[in-house]
Structures are given as structure tokens and as C-alpha cells.
Image 1 (cartoon, rainbow, N blue to C red):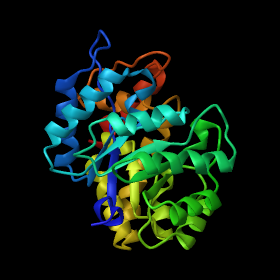
Image 2: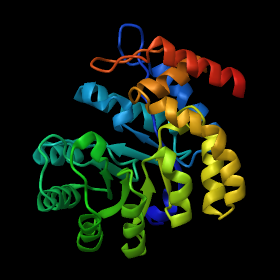
Image 3: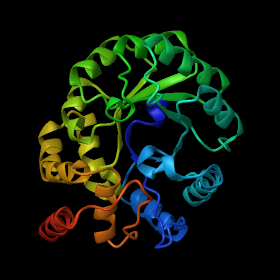
Image 4: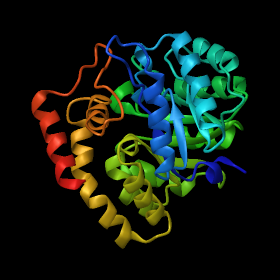
Length: 295
């Protein structure tokens, strides 16, 4: 089974719950995993940037990976996020992290360095050659400062065997369409922009790695499945109530928005590690009002 079959549908870039002292709340993480799976998502992404990985040390990351594998217990596939702006360090991590129970590595474009397109190509080529499992490119220029151009993505897809797909969060339907038009048949393309998923499904994407599906897994994954089945009347009906959610999730910071929702749902404590802070009181009140009116 290739990644286009394994990871078709909705993946969740799961948050990392913390206790009041900012230590990892594994009990809450287990509860969240069960909630997400019970509500129909197709797979889980651990250690994505929504999991606040820039503020997790290596030992914490290893503990989260192993806990997640054990808790999920093969109920759904798991993708592990391993990225960075030091190619050698990323290669060291993909070689040493426990990936035997993962189906793919998700690796964000190097941030801050602003490499050329050739540098991006060689970065991913080196990681893919070192990785024991397929690598998913993660294009998120709003965070990294560098867009992975469609031509670079397609070059990686055609020239590097162990590049399995891309999470495309370039906020550009045009770029997404170009990748979809020219990709190899077995190359997975999923969205990383929750608010663009509905139109991108019409363009032919295979699914999404979502933030919103942490707190609305049933509604969001049902919308995606309807779109994959080309039932866009149903998909639109499911998506329309979520438009306000997308606005609230990203109005100040991610994962502050999603943690604000999950707190109101009683699944986690509203704790983040600096430099990220919780939602302002006014936006948190809007989250409360949305949930009061929708549940």
C-alpha cells in the first residue's frame, strides 16, 4: 500500500498537552488521541509544529513518539514530524528516532536560513536517502520564510525515490493545482491550510493534515470524506459552520487557538510554552461563544 492509499483523508497535527508546570500531560495526550480516533480521522501526525516542537527537548520528543505509538496501538497510521534547519541534525534524527511503527516522516522546509531552491532540493534529497521510511515535504512559507516552488516539489517527486508526498501549506491554490497536474501517480498531496481544504479537494488533493481536526475531528473528517467522494453539496454544508473555527484558530497564534478550543471541550489544560502564549481573553470568549452556540 502506497502513501496515497494509507494517508488518504484527514490526518491530525496533534497538540502536545502540558500540565500547569509545563511538563507533558501524557494522560491528556492519551485522552486526546482516543477522542480524535473515535471521531473518525484517518491518521495522526505526532511532533508536528502544532505540537510545539521548537520548545520540546529531544528526550521529550522520544517519550511522545513512543507513548503515541503505544496508545494508538496500530488503530490508525502514525506520521512523525522531524524537521529543522540543520540538514545534518535532521539526518541524525531520522536515523536514530524510533520510526519502526511510523509510515512516514513529515519534514518542514528549513526555516530562517532561507535556502535557494537548489538548497531545498539537496536538503530533502539528503534526508530521504538517510530515512528508513518515506519522507513527506512540508511547505509552510508563512512559518519558514521560504516557499518550496512547485517545480522543486515536482523535481523531488520524480528524482528522489523516498520522497513520498507533500503537505502543501503555501496558501496558494494555484501552486497546489500545478503540483496536482504534474505529480507522479504515487505522489501524495495533502493540504496544510484548513481554510482552503474544500476548494483544494475539488482540485484533486488526497486529503489534509489538519489543526482543526484536533477539536472538530468528526465534522472536519466527514467534510473531507465527502469532498473526496465528490459530494461537494454535503462537504460545503459541513464546512460552512467551520469557517469561523478556522478564523479563531489562527487569529493570534497556532497552537494557541486550538488549545483554547480543546480547553473549553475539557480535553486539556490551557498551557503553552513561551514564547507562545494563550489566546487573549477577548478571543477566548469568542471561542466559548462559538462552542455554546454550536454544541
